[in-house]
Amino acid sequence: MTITIIAAMAGNRVIGKEGRIPWHLPDDLARFRAITMGHPVIMGRRTFDSIGRPLPGRLNIVLTRREWYAPKGVAVARSLAEALELAGTAGEVFICGGGQVYREALPLADRIHLTVVHLPFDGDVTFPELPFDFVETARVEGEGAPRHTFLTFERRRELMP
Image 1 (cartoon, rainbow, N blue to C red):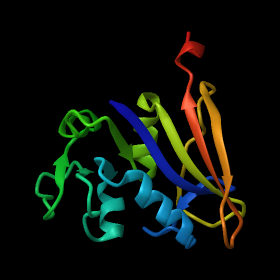
Image 2 (image 1 turned 90 degrees about the horizontal axis):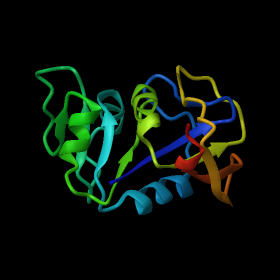
Image 3 (image 1 turned 135 degrees about the vertical axis):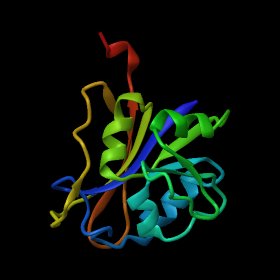
């Protein structure tokens, strides 16, 4: 199974503020939908709560330590390992936030789709620094304002000691 992180961050690595994404980029939302459609998506409870509903056309797996948490239309996992098990035999699974889930998944990730918004934003959640073994493999400039770029990184396992 390929583990792919998908995220959008500001130039100062901010990904969220008070449970919201601090910008609106229609082409980024369309890209997210196109890339993740038909694949399992794993997200933290706060990310799911900020969306407010399951993402259609995808198995939604929500990570939480809250035993009583069981929203309709999603699978609930208590750990990333359990979430990956719930994804079953999917060819690719997407990690879509938030900050703590990204940090936990980064050592396991094979690929990262990262939208970079070329402005700083105030926020309370950040995206982690990428390890040295991720190599940029694609770059496309987004449309609209604020200026943004879609990047794809692949992990080069042969670089690891």
